Image (cartoon, rainbow, N blue to C red; front, side, top):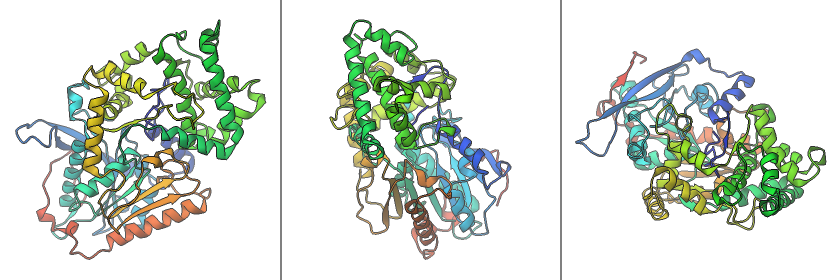
Length: 514
């Protein structure tokens, strides 16, 4: 799964026998980096939550998974919570990374809460459209609030309740900031890395940002992509052209050029793979391209005689790296997979169906080809293509109007790019196209926005390394100082209420760790 991190998938890229997820990627990075925390120090446990926090008459409950690492906890220390997002969680975030470095510095207990409907969390019998009505940011934030309240009561020891700082990346970064906005009496502060705060249906600026980063690496890189997509468009109507595209891009089924959604999926899938090189900027050893390696492939004639063949080589290399057979662009087949509502299905296990529902109802975030400033084929995967997937998968009522209402509500509830919130630090890398939806200011003097030159998506959340740029290293130090300031505030602050005033929530599989 290539997620919002992850990305909102431009065209729901589906590679046969592949599902790339960020959790697995981060674990591979940790394996090479020798994490500073033992896996044995991490415990898995569960907390009982209500299915619907906003209907007192609905008493249905479910068990939410979380992980804890108390290895660095000192007496009276704070509680750090890594907020889970639109994918199964990885305990790697409790082994190393920015939060764990700060946990060691400040003697904090560390927790990771997995998002409802993702990973092992199964609040309902299936993932039908009716069940997904309980998958909203409001419900997820209420889960988080009840979890934090329970932790504070559990670790308070009868005195002042411990201070809680939230950490998140991408969508989960938005949740962390919004939790501070909605529940300031529970949350002392939030570190929000690459948080997309503005809900928007047609996110055409995303690929504009991708083009800027590629152009900074090599102007020829963008020119060659533009030439390749022009040739792809020509082949759609040429004799034998669809067959040639089928072979070049290793499609699972012959391309039917008369089916607009199949064509959109092909063009969008290629854009998504290149965009991932920009947002992740990873090493090939991690199974992904960096900006430099992708552009080298696209402009170097030794990888193919024409821009089109080199562009197709991006897909070929991804197939090889992932041990996959082909790219699926047949819209009917893709829709059929997303319609499967069983927990064991591939699109559900990866979280793809659930995240699609959230984008169709609350966020949009669709990275369209509507801008002339991007090289991936103007108009080849328009907003209508993404909206079609919403209605095809979830039903006819999931229209553009329904999405626009949801987007307006999301921006109204949380303040869009200028939230009235204190004690949040927003961080964005200059190479991250998601920053176009990021924080642009706040009415509070206690909210910070840090722009990191040369950094990719949520780069600051990973562990510090010798390869960090001076800007990234400085950003880490700034976050350390800001979090330290939050923790040192006067005990009269509202989030330091006595522990006996905190809500009591039941933990399952509980052990005494106080």
